[in-house]
Length: 265
Image (cartoon, rainbow, N blue to C red; front, side, top):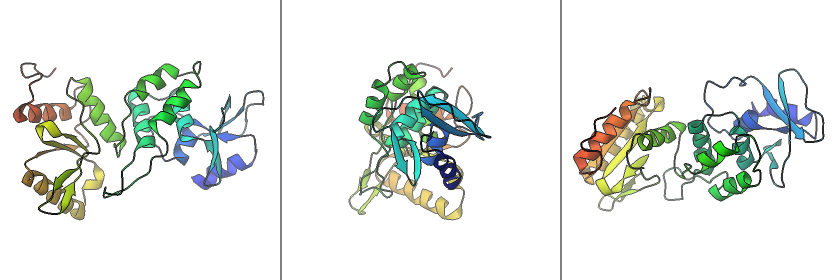
């Protein structure tokens, strides 16, 4: 995919890969419903002609300094500018997932250390630099929901569903230490006050080796005096996802005082 997109950008030095194509270069999560997934998305600066080629969706855009970069030999919008351009097309929750991905970082103590592609401050600076752009209201709203520490779009959607249905916002990047074992457990999300660990188990958790790792993680979590709530890939479906029911019940059992008398509706 990168080589294909590089070829399009090399045809014209004034062209830049933008929005959906830029997101693919940065490997940002995109929803499956996108109508333009087969197009190469190119833009030229305002004042130039719109790119017109077969299978190309052309645009004219104004870029501030630093918003066009070379990545892996491809001329592409920066991560922060890509986020802003996607705000014109994506649903709010999908845009938050893109923002979470771009700012996600783990330090060297995490089992999977990772450097962020950009910071929340860089996202905010880019958004503030284009006050009249299409999608700017959505970009600002999503930015307030972006958090560091979500490793997948599904983890983002889980967090947003919990908040939408009145549950406390879980903590990301929380480490559960077992010093007597010399190990740490890293929940996908956590409620430290109520000693609850949330783990999202997608399709990659179906293999035998992963099952054994998940089993050991749950055993260590319980040894530390915590409860692990495992969310399956089907538990986020619908307007009333079952994941919310499970987390609500676990919180109530752990002593969370909120919403005790409220039925789930």
